[in-house]
Amino acid sequence: MPAFLHKRESFFLLVALALGAVAGGVLYLSRPTTLRVAVGPRDRVESHLIQAYADALARAREDIRLEVVHYDDVRDSAAALQSGRADLAVVRPDVRLPENGLTLAVLHDEALVVAAPPDAGIQAFPDLAGKRLGLVAHHGADQPLVASLLAYYALTPAPAGAAPAPADPGGAGPAGAGSVALVPMRASEVAAALAEHRIDAAAVIAAPSDKSAARVVQAVEAASASHGATIVAIPDGEAIVQRLPELQAVTIAAGTFGGRPKRPDEDVKTVGASYRLMARASLSRDTAASVTQHLFELRSRLAAMTPTANLMKAPDFDSAAEATSARLPIHPGAVDYYEREQQTFLQRYEDWVYLVAFFGGGLGSAVAWLGQRLAREQRARVDAVLDRLLAILIEARATQDPAALEALAVEIDGLVIDVVRHARAHDTDVRTMSALILAVDAARAAVAECRRDGAPLRERVGRVLSLHPASGA
Image (cartoon, helix red, strand yellow):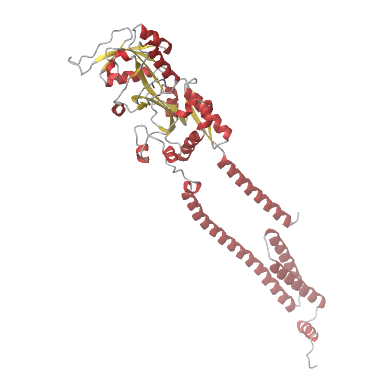
């Protein structure tokens, strides 16, 4: 096969390899990042929300994809994040807070909603001393949460069947010390339990806007002689959160439960728990920012399938430093999104761009120098062949020995073979090839002429000169 065809095939092969490498790099960089998210249990609204989020990301073909892994309890999902089996997890901090978990978003807050008949004389949480509280629990951690609040107010939980001890301000114990009987029950049992005086108030831990909270309040109203309900306040929420940082200070807005007149008639402060989407601390800032951004950008789509999406919010913080050092720290990537400080591609890889440009320039200079060095070596080889051919031309004109002429002819053939091989292996410019051809032809012609002529040197020189007579002859 001709040499130029070999060169063309090599060129096209290199171009194809380069294009394939570029295409592979583009595909690798543009492929979506898949994250494992742990959520539990399967029948909770948080599970429905995360599954809807994963489906929305897939439909929108975003750069983030979620692989949802269901667990039996929110405690298990937090454990999966802490053990590294998940990148994200739905966490309720008062149940279990993973050591490596940083908040991306608050999916929703749940408040301790305590409702009592107006004639029960219960206005604030400490008034429950000596009372029986019916607790509609949705999670195993609900009762421990209430017990923690009772302990804050120096109240002790009593068994459901035991008579609660009233507060005894003048006794030897702490001021207001007493006990509260916690009576587990279902929401459908609240009205009958109040009517039969088996409980004095009812409580549920749920989002204030959730139907389960409204059902408990309506049950208290149905059992009340005045058809009213007092929403019991926990006014020391901020102080409680300082002691129990896994809890949340929550405000039940006036009119949350509707009605005429509105229920409650003014804002009520209480405490509760939050369900949070957390990420492992080692998750990159860019990925965490993208997860948070898509979560809120897709809120309207998620709300159409899961109304709980309307309750999502950003964690409270005043500055980036406060956010990352809070009692429940926020992931720096989420802070970037909330502060609108997400980095562009060039900002993100600025150092790498400079390094590549710096070292790439140096490498390019080295390659250029090496190319010039190789070109000089190739040209030196061609120049050596040209010099030898010119020398053969002179030697052929100066010798009469047939053996010497034969040796020169053989040497010329060897030089021709070497030149042809060099031209096949390397690019050679037209001017150099023309000079080589002229030199080869001249050397061969000189050897051939000397062989044919066989005359002494001076006779041959005279004959050559006779071809150019003087102008005066």
